[in-house]
Amino acid sequence: VELTEFDTALLAAGDPGIVSGLASLQAQNISAWFGDHKVLDRVSLLMPAGKVTALIGPSGCGKSTFLRTLNRMHELVPSASLAGEVLLDGHDIYDASRRITQARREIGMVFQKPNPFPAMSIFDNVVAGLALTGLKVSKSDKADLVEESLLKAGLWTEVKDRLRQAGGGLSGGQQQRLCIARSLAVKPRILLMDEPCSALDPTSTRRIEQTITELSTDVTIVIVTHNMQQAQRVSDQCAFFLAEAGTPGQIVEHGPTDVMFDSPQDSRTLDYVNGRF
Ligand code: ADP
Ligand code: MG
Image (cartoon, rainbow, N blue to C red; front, side):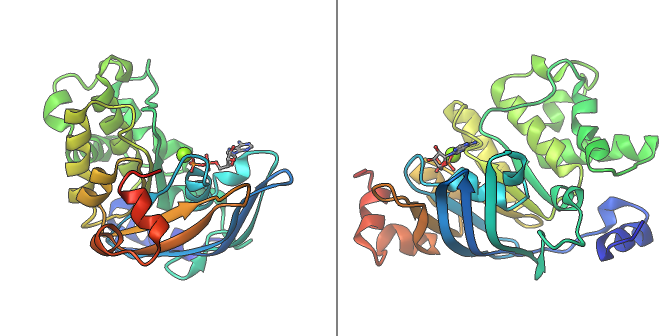
């Protein structure tokens, strides 16, 4: 078995937690298809280390597809194909020498609908990603990792006395924070979030936004959101996607969040952020 640089670093550290350091993600000329249907056309975007990037735009313009190209989930759809590169700290995650599990470990994903394993305990949910990405952690380290991940996800105080209860028994907002903890347990360098609050009430939404802000000091975050207030509250930069009249999705404009909301260059951006379509 050939070891990648990342594997070597992991082994040298002896503990996945010790491998740290902020990473940037750079998409270069990403085009994506489902069968013959081209849904993204040469999308390029730098997602800077330690920043929150919001992907905004109307339904169907390819935001989720783009997000899934960033951690090699797109290729799980049998009809899907892809062109372009995704550079994680300068290294293409699609490079033939890099394994798909490595991309998944370094680049976590949280989905719109909270999806903990419902019958599994809260504790086991948090560490479920370790086995899936091939990481081994000793039993005593596991307890620490669970506490640390739940703390970061803002759920620890609510669940610390019932870690053996089923994840499915939590409220929707708690389940979503459990999913965030599960992602964090594998120490990702990038966290992708696809409308993580769309299924949640306003209070749960604000708690998750607070978590996102806290996390962004040590994880690079990319979030898809339909909520323009949310984009303004949590993101440093925004990319506005649009798929006009049967054309594949493209980024119309991207830039610092305040500029995108106050004085964007393209009138379509201004119309969109002001809720005009
Ligand atoms: P958004 O997240 O911006 O709403 P999506 O990335 O989900 O957009 O979808 C972009 C386009 O790709 C849409 O036309 C959608 O119908 C199509 N699409 C998404 N997922 C699939 C799939 N699994 N198979 C076929 N077409 C898909
Ligand atoms: Mg979507």
